[in-house]
Image (cartoon, rainbow, N blue to C red; front, side):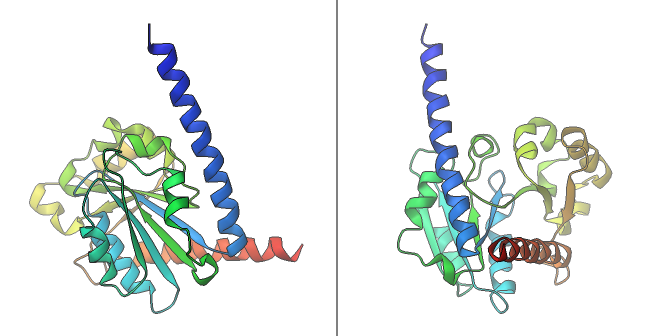
Length: 230
C-alpha cells in the first residue's frame, strides 16, 4: 500500500537533486572549474589515489577536494597533507553525496581560484549511482582485491561513470587477479568503457591515469574558452 508513496518521494528527491546538479554544472563552467568525482566500494583505494593525484597535480594546477564520509574527518586530514584546500562532508546516516551537500560545502569558496575540484564520494557502489553531483568526469574504481566480477554485481554505477580505474595492481599477482576476465566484466556491462590500470605504490603506476585526467581538463578548458568567445 505504501509503495506508490515511496516512489513519489524518491522521484521528487532525484528531481530536486538533478536541478541543483544542473545549477552546479553551470556554475562550474562559468568559473572554469573542472570537476571530477571518484566512486568505489569501501577500501578500493579512493583516498590513496586522490592523495597521490592532488600531490602530483598541485605543482601545475590549482586543485582542491571535497570528501564525503558517514563519520570522522580522517580522510580530509589525509588529503590535506598534500597541501591543497580540502573540505570534509560528514553525511551521518546518508550513504552517498548529494548535489545539495556539494552546494553547501562550496559556500564561501572562490571557484575561480580553482582549476580542478575533486569529489570523493562515500564508499558505496549502490546509492551514488543515482545522484548527479554536477561533475564533468566520474571515475569508478575497481580494486584487484575485490574480484573480477564486481561490475556484474553493481552494473548501475559502471553505467553512470565515464571511466573505470583499476586500483592496487601491485597486488594483482598475490591475489590471482585475472585482468582479461575483469575487462570482460566491464565490457559486458558497459561496452567500450575505458579502463585505466593504476598502482599508487608504483612511481609509474599513475602515469596513464594522470595523463588522461590532464587531457580531459585541457579539453574542458578549450570548450569553455571557445564558448566564452562566441
